[in-house]
Amino acid sequence: MTPWFVQKYSHGLDFPNLPYYIDGDVRITQSFAILQYIARKYNLYGDTIEEQATIDMVSQTVNDLRSAAWVTYNDPKFHQIKDEWKKTVPGRLGDLNKFLEGKTFVLGTKLSFVDFVVYEFMEWYRQCIPDVFEQPELANLNSFQLRITEIPQIKEYLNSDKFKSWPFFAPVVNFGFSKAS
Ligand SMILES: N[C@@H](CCC(=O)N[C@@H](CS)C(=O)NCC(=O)O)C(=O)O
Image (tube, rainbow, N blue to C red):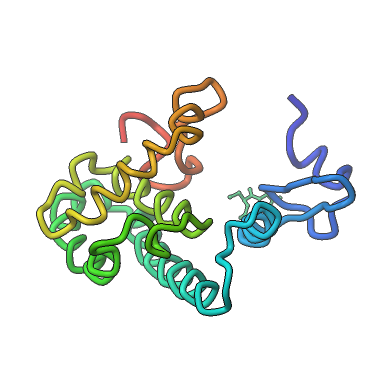
C-alpha cells in the first residue's frame, strides 16, 4: 500500500487530508463536510429547518463531549484514572440520555445522519469500557445504541469484512491502538 504522505497530493483534493471522499466530480475532505454531503444526498438531514436545527444542535453537543473525552484519552495516566472516569460518564452524558427519552432516533422516529454521529461517539466509550452504558442512568443511550446496530444495513455492515473495529485511534493515544491498552 502506498504510504499516505506519498499519495497525499495525487487525488486532486483542495485540502488533502484523511478521510477524503470522492463522488464523481465531488472531491472533499473534512469528516463533517463528508457526512453532511452524504446526508444531503441521501435525504438524511431532516426535512424542515426545525429538524435540521435539532440535528445541528445534537451534533455540536456531541462534538463538545468528544473534545472532553479526547482530553481524557490523551491523559498519560489514563489507565489509572479509567475506573474513576467511568463513574463520571452518567453526569457527562445525562442531557443526551434525557433527550433520547421516548425517542427511537434523535428526530423521534425519523432516521438522520446525526444518529450515526451519536452512535460513533458512544463507541469511544464502549470500546474502552464495554459495560459503561449498562449503568441505569444511561438506559436510553444503551437502548439507542443497540437499536442502531439492529438497522438491517448497519447489522450487515458490522458483520462484514468491510467493518474494521480496531485500531480505534492512532498509536499516540493512550487507548485504542494496542489491544493491551
Ligand atoms: N478536521 C479533520 C481532521 C483530519 C485529521 O486529523 N486526519 C488525520 C487522521 S484522523 C490524518 O492523519 N490526516 C492526514 C494528514 O494530515 O495528512 C477532519 O475532521 O476530517
